[in-house]
Image 1 (tube, rainbow, N blue to C red):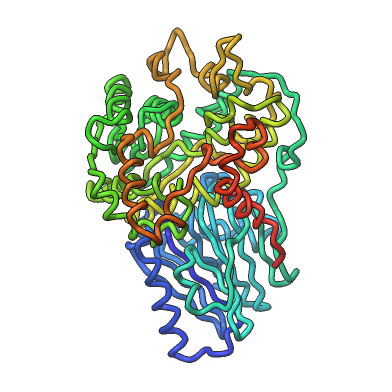
Image 2: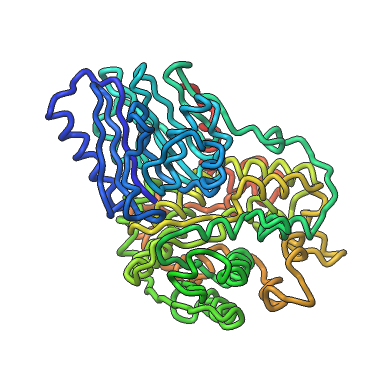
Length: 526
């Protein structure tokens, strides 16, 4: 994961301003410790801190078109860049970087190319021919991006708020699935899937289609997991032993021998787990790793080590949301250990609970209509919570996290299924995420042991050890300032609407309201 900073329309384009941009860009260097780049054009600046994953030797940024009139700084990965290059045969590429296609796609299609990108990305592009610029963020908000405005009328973009906070009069989260155009004067949504309207779908459940979309289709078109094995550096899978991470590890291990990276790094998958000694995750992850034959790495931390890290965690993840902090802390500590082994990229299981209604409060969903609308709202809010955690906790140490469940095509398939199939039905033997469990329940060639495939949901911060939450609560109760920021009661991070599913949950309305108000800010006008 890289760090980007871009500024347009500064009234000051002196050497002092250039130095200031470099200084602010350094605040993002943890995201990209491998190289730094800066392009200046008049009163416009595009800076980049690179984490080299694809084409480490020649893919430094910013990137350009043939005559360097189009400049782009990108954070992310474009998984279909090879297919896109086939559509751009009249263009000359300078590097093997997957992100270079963005500059050439803009030349070929103007501003209407973003939906062609298959990946996770935030980018800013400058067209020096008319000094226009665009910025865009991926469909779900896997990569972070913020927009700000200076007192001099300048427009700023950055991967993290810490690069904007001192120099912008105001700033806000850049909305996922949106593009900002200086020509059109504001944000517009480029990502318009059918499920976004929250209308109730009726497509019958096809377990084979769901499995193939997540794994690899018969046509050899690489899909959710396999395409994310595109890398030129060592990688692995974050394995908690729960359903989601275990499926990612199972699918990745099956296809390791087929991917190009196996020639360089070997065909045995590396897996990583963190927890307090004796925690549920450590035991389950070890069992899955043994079953899959991965090279497993187990990391331990103590409650005190977690508490000692909280302040630094908050600095990096840039939120005071309680659930995000408590889940980010173990991930932050694990990421440091993983990076020390020379690994630069990991796959992770975020997004499945939002898509399939996997949180335990979904047991109370009164009907399929309510369940579907709740899953839609949860996906739309991922950029504020789980995507933010997964990205910033890992990027704090120069580690990139990729999330196969948030593949655009996989989401389209999963969200088109009649939500009746996602309902928890004890009378039919269906627990949460039954349709996903069933899709991978292959008697002839099992992906996972049965009891792992049907293991009940644990929140990440619970699975690493129950005393972690208790220790954090005790610590927060001793800190007056922490009581209002680090710990609040909640019901599995549901939206305010879902609180109405059970009258007993109403006592938690204040904490849930904090979540919902922040989600509601998505549609705040510029």
